[in-house]
Length: 225
Image (cartoon, rainbow, N blue to C red; front, side, top):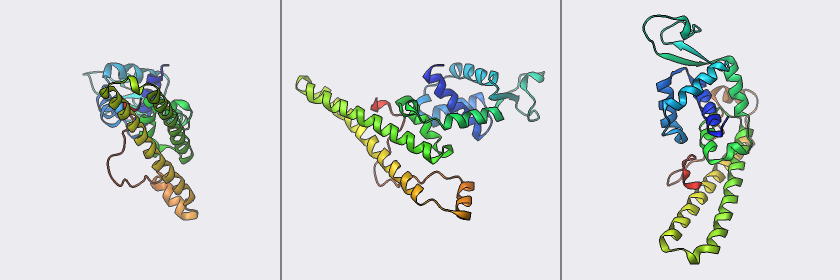
């Protein structure tokens, strides 16, 4: 499985965990909610859906049919197909959510992983955020070294482009620092007893930092590549 098809599988399972969807609705959510898939086509999505159905992680149902009745069991005029996550699919997605290795820090993967942080445990969120920050700090150091060595050979426009790229990376590192600080503060202030139960039932997202000005960087923005 390619890296792109792997993150597509993750995104599809995550969106369908929220609610069943038609293929068109799912493609729209991928295009509008997850930046890395803005130019995504149904021709690419359809094979992924079929593979997930074959794996037993999704089931195809006909819109309006009783829940659990597969589309193949119905005849007559063509109806819209709804994709629903199975119990096995939910378990598989939770396994993917728990993964926090280097793939989760990469440009193509990080934005999608971040989009599902509300469903991700705090410890995994911290590992992904810290890994992403470490990766960008390494990139920033390489960019600075390269610029120092070659700036005398660059014209003004090339030099300005290099500076713009560095500023983009620096901005994301600052944003990650804020997120990591907020996650740590939330962990230190974790409630106990009945308060903890109430918070778990309402969904603990760790508390995002209050943004004091400017705009947050888009985790899927390819200017940091």
